[in-house]
Length: 473
Image (cartoon, rainbow, N blue to C red; front, side, top):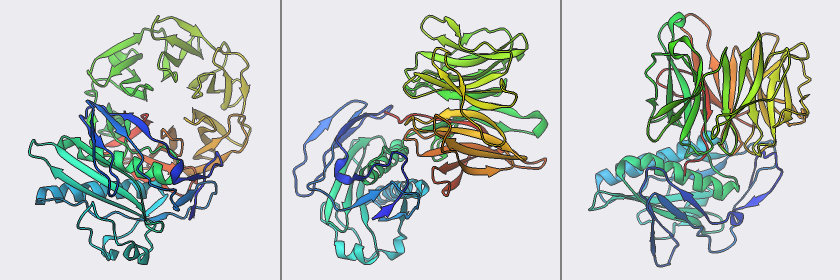
């Protein structure tokens, strides 16, 4: 048993996770139900996977995520088996990515391979559970990877409850070999979900602003990568400054601000086609565009007449509606996940604070009342918390509070922390931290809701303004 924090205060057992269907992007996948001693029947889909739980009975392994104390679950992840050297190399890489994902979550402690007693030799044979209990493994992941005669990569895995001596779940995947890392992320999500009862967040991407060059002449380009920092690629060429990229709920589009021709405009970029379009030409400055939960609208801040107010644009009609009308600076809007409310920052009360209003602009009210200035509010995908940046006594802090302003908690602080973004399951925040000095620059970091699991996120250049995608389908 391990205890972890979850704000919803719900206890989950492994058997409470239900079968569900997930859609892949860019992968031709064939997934089979894998159950010890059972026949295998293939269900083939194009760009789709049918995911079925394989628990034969109620498992004893349970993770209680209602507490604030983190006691990571010991889990063993041997290298996946393979018939050839290439198969085994891929299998070792897949297992390493799974272990790294689970370790970064702070909820799991992958055991060192040097401690393993049993050497797994057949994924279709039950492990010697006693050998794994001796090293205190509570869960075990076994698997096999094979390059088939037609060139496809076949990967199968099983998750075992060591103490109950039961298989908890198992899948097979068929894809191209270059998708091996994506398969590892999908398996990581399956393990995470089966053992915590929450959705995983590993099969996701991060869009961010890549920064290079001297501090006074920074080239800023839009970039995208996997959530663990791998597979980075540039989306813009650096000919104009880009700011505040944000994902559409559909994953396929990004909205961002570009200063092409020294004229700030809001753009939409289709990730599948590479096509981009201008949302609209707005007089004055435009700030912080963000999608509505249904992807049909964009909310942003427009500067007109010396002050800044919040506007909403319907992407289907391109009609713009003004939501706030004050002589103050209203900016940084973020929708609640149900789309009914918007959090934003404003200095209408004399200092920079966080406010919440209805989606039509009515009933705006302040929710931040602690010491210091508050900015960059971002609503959690679960709807239970709002993340923020806080400036107090020269320090930049990243924290969370409930939508009514109660329960404020600081998760991390530093010289310059800013721009939190939520993982799609609402458990982890990513943000950027500026380092001091002439040679310094921004870098990406993550921290979970306990505030104890803070990690750097590797990028090939300086990086700022991260935005986390929804789960890929």
